[in-house]
Amino acid sequence: SPFAIRTLVFVIVGIGAFVVLACLTPRFFAKYGGRVSELEAKYILFALFSMLLAGSVGSDHILVRRLRTVTFGLLTPFYFIRAGSFVSVPALVAAPMAFVLLFFAKMLSKMSGLFPAVRAYNYVGREGWYYTLMMSTGLTFGTISALFGLNHGIISQAQYSYLVATVIGSAVVPTIIANAFFMPSHLLAEPETPFVEVVEAVADGAT
Image (tube, rainbow, N blue to C red; front, side, top):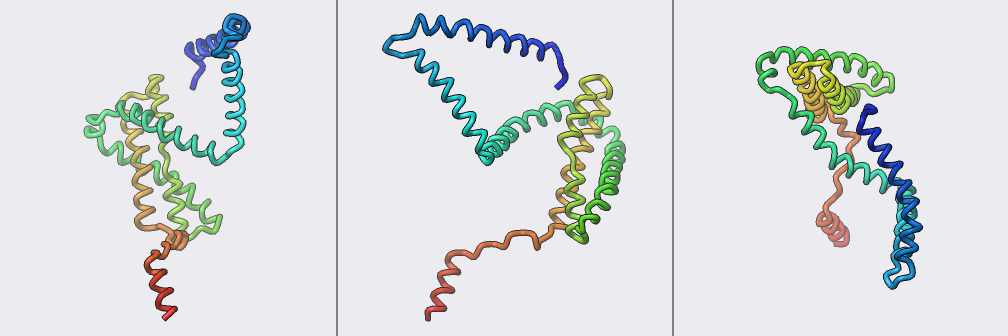
C-alpha cells in the first residue's frame, strides 16, 4: 500500500493514542482505584492477559497458520469482488480476440519457462505436466497489478477488463486441465477401508 494521507493520519492518531493513554492511566487509577469494582486491577489484568495471549498464540505455529487461513478466507473474497466489479463485460464482448490472444500469450510464456525447470527436478510425464500447469496459474499478483494500473490511470477500463479476464482464465483453465488429465494418481492417498469390510474380513478369518 502506498504512503498516502491516510497512512500519515494513522501514524499521528497512533502516536496520540499512546501519549493520551500514558497520561490518563495514572489519573484513572487515582480516581477509580480502591473501589469495590477494582477497575484498576481489571485494567492491569486486561493488559497482562493480552501480552500473555500474544506470546502463547505466537508460539503455536499451527494456530497462527490457521488464523492466517481464516483471515485470508474471510478478506480475500471482498478484494476479488471489488476487483471484479470494475470489469466491463461489453468491452469483452466487443473484442473477444484480445482476451484470447492475451490468454495464450500468458500461458505459452509461463509454460515455456516452467516446463524446463520442472524437468530439471526430474518431474517428467504426467507428473511434470501437472506441476507445469498448476504453477502456470496466477491470480492474486495479476489482479493487484491490473487494479493498480487502473487506479493510477495507466490503463483504461477496457484494458483492465481484458487483463483481469486473462488472469482469471489463466488460473481456472490450467487447473481444470491438470486435475482432469494429468493428476499424478500415485501420489494420492489410498482410500481407507470401510469399517464394515474390516469386520467382515476379520469374521471370515475367524471362521
